[in-house]
Length: 226
Image (cartoon, rainbow, N blue to C red):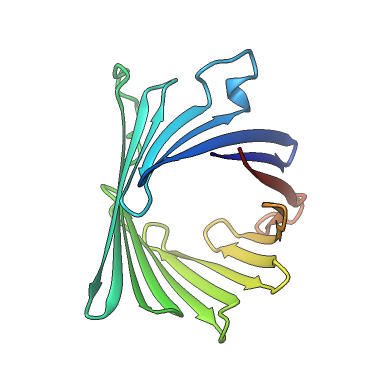
């Protein structure tokens, strides 16, 4: 059994989460809880139960509000190219409330990726009913592919997003992101620990309003074998 503890600080808000994972043959069972499960005494709020078969399917259940998420994955070789498909649908078994004034976002999504070679991949993401999609191209540069460039175009927003990631042999990773629709520029540094954890520090700049102070993010993750 594996246990994961994660702490996160963002702006003036601190959060924590823990996950327990136990294998059962080809399947894996996980129980995850955020600080909401213990804030006012033990409760089901913030608890998520997951049953998955890696690479095949995943089922998430939130007992507090009876939300369920189904995800099915498959891949195949088509003309010597690896094509991967993921279908995700979320629903709720709780009694339906009165219809909201505004339409709810789509709870069904389709993702398709085509890997042309180890350095080039294209991913298409579509939420049913949205009328648009997100197209991302991933390019891994160099012999060791330590630098990754990911331009993305969102047809709904008619805007680009960019991400560049640089990995270093010592376990450090630096990532920069920019979203044209929100004019948010982000920088992130992370390091994997030999003890089985990781540490991440990041900051986000709002280039549309330079009077705003950058938002700082710090995150630590610890992994344990039980």
